[in-house]
Amino acid sequence: MSQPDPRQGLEKGRAIRDAKIALVLIHKQFWTSRFEHAWLTFLMTYQRGSIDDIPLLVDVPDEIGRSAWGAATRALVSANLIAVVARVQSRRPLRHGPRTRSSR
Image (cartoon, rainbow, N blue to C red):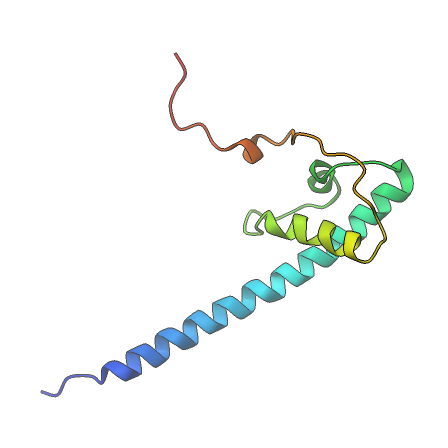
């Protein structure tokens, strides 16, 4: 009985990896665009806000990483559409890490 060629497995693994990376990039671009729009709409209404306001504006699936939020903000700052005027500590519990030990 002949053994399967290990190169075929490597090629298949790379194809799966590349497909998943492409999917992540597509979703990140889509969600970053949605966040940019929501962010601009919020700021035109309220003049000030924080990145914590984004999930209140857009129903974000759990699979979407938080990096898309920062990417949207960086893109708007880079385009000189918004400016950072102050830094505030995040109010999001996830921002501060999950609790793994019970408190006593």
